[in-house]
Figure (tube, one colour):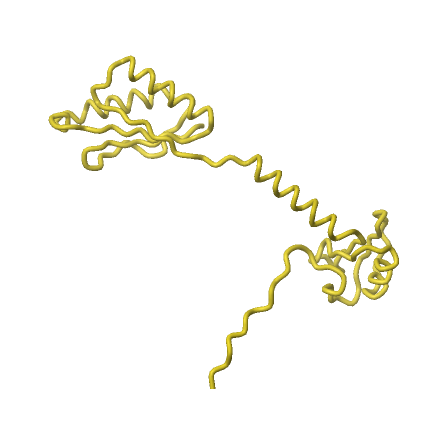
Length: 178
């Protein structure tokens, strides 16, 4: 006979609270922050009920576990706010691509280098792509010289993450900010 699929019990997010705490004795800290010492779990639960707050497990690995009387809703809200603030301040690193040709003019080169420097200031990585066309394939050393020139100019602000390599008709190099 085939048994129906039984899903696993849902796991709760955050610390254990009130009746979820299943140890006989705990170290109790009351709502004012005073340490009441080691008490039984029933005494701790009744003290929390008396105060109209929750009993929350702060340090489950301690011997005995440390519990505190506080408002669980406020704690969850504060943790949510802290996580949102941390997400707001983190920056994702993007890879910006700069395309060049091996016989690039000096002014065009300067414009591209200005963009590369701006990308590094913003904290992004830069992928330099050199595209070879037709007879330019016979002069790969010109492309290599150009990439080495870029490497030397950005040596103070960037490090080479991927050495120049040839893939078909393109030569690529990745630089990351220091």
